[in-house]
Amino acid sequence: MADLIIKGGTVVNATGTAEADVVIDGERISALLAPGVADSIGIDGNASRVIDATGKYVIPGGIDAHTHMQLPFGGTQASDTFETGTTAAAWGGTTSIIDFAVQKYGERVEDGLGHWHELADGNCAIDYGFHQIIGGVDEESLKAMETLVDEGITSYKLFMAYPGVFYSDDAQILRAMQKARERGLLTMMHAENGPAIDVLAAQLAESGKTAPYFHGIARAWQMEEEATHRAIMLSDLTEAPLYIVHMSAKQAVEQVAWARDKGKNVFGETCPQYLYLSLEKQLGARSEEWGDFEGAKWVCSTPLRSEEEGHLEAMWQGLRTNDLQMVSTDHCPFCMKDQKELGRNDFRAIPNGIGSIEHRVDLLYQGVVDGRISLPRWVELISTTPARMFGLYGRKGVIQPGADADIVVYDPNGHTSIGVGKTHHMNMDHSAWEGFEIDGHVDVTISRGTVLVEDGRFTGTKGHGRFLKRDLTQYLV
Ligand code: URP
Ligand code: ZN
Ligand code: ZN
Ligand code: ZN
Image (cartoon, rainbow, N blue to C red):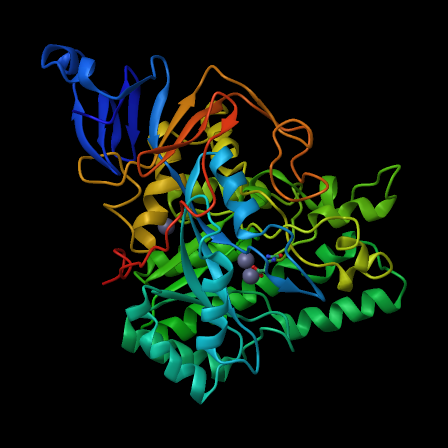
């Protein structure tokens, strides 16, 4: 009869919790049964497999909607391949990612997208979709945006930062948003004032302030607040819904809150690093091995911000008030050796990014333990909202009959010690999360009915993961 039953657990959806057994047939969930029903109707004895989830949470698999496998950046590329990155994701209870296909300036969007399919196809352990980075808005790329929805790509990203690399000016943003409005695409924005930041960064470097810490000083919160506001107004004008990625500044979140309170179609994403890591402790860190270059491990954009100034607390508050709706990792790992090291003498040359794909589900669960968010809100943040926001809900993001059997059995009495040599499967020579302790544990990860991780073993395969053609977001009017 059933292929798999997950028995005795507490099913947690974004809507609440229920004691229920989850019945899986093939790749999908076929039923949720009240305790005892499986025995009484005799499904139990006939199931090919039963997983005992007594005392554990049964949750929809994590969806990490912001990753950068193999992203070319600063003369190198992100160190996780689709294989290593999605395998690490599975270890950490994530069963879908949405990665960013890249159109570099001067390249055709179709070619960039085609290249991304080549990189991912046959290499992923979990399901994957794409957003499209538009690195050069012009007649040709605007035309190419017209067919993205047909390809299952319903969101795209622009950069107000990184002049000369991915940067778009206001005129380009305006034109792209007009096209997005026409086609129903969601505009994702890297909101930092790149040209002003580059001046500040050059002034710091020229005065001898070359350590990683000054990356955070150059990328001042005013640069994020200003760009966030500018993006909101361009979105308002064009009536193109807007999603601000990787937010870290308290004042930028206030801009999103203001826009939402005015009824504007604006959404905000933050990342685990902006909830837990700071300018003072991490970006300003020193070690015996690296001296003040230790901070390079945490060079990312937007930067880690001051805990003293209240930015970290403001991110948690945004999650509680739903002024921030999303937590993705912005997973963009680089090794210290040969990669971050490129900026040993000048922070401007440090490739930007932190690797967290393996730890997002755990790090947010710690927010439940610490009394910052509720259990259903945890599930909403790790799975349900990303599914709704990016056109996957129903298939993904919920435990209900008909949904893909993407399921994690999470043990609230387990423990996870994060660090290299402990729980570290990302292709990095260090962990940005070294020494973090989590009062919970991912016991089992299941993707479309196939067990990927169990009893501390990876039983998945590269190539199991399929491309997700996504629908339009369910949040837009
Ligand atoms: O530092 C970051 N965020 N690296 C990845 C590229 C981006 O801007 O998202
Ligand atoms: Zn970005
Ligand atoms: Zn509000
Ligand atoms: Zn990113």
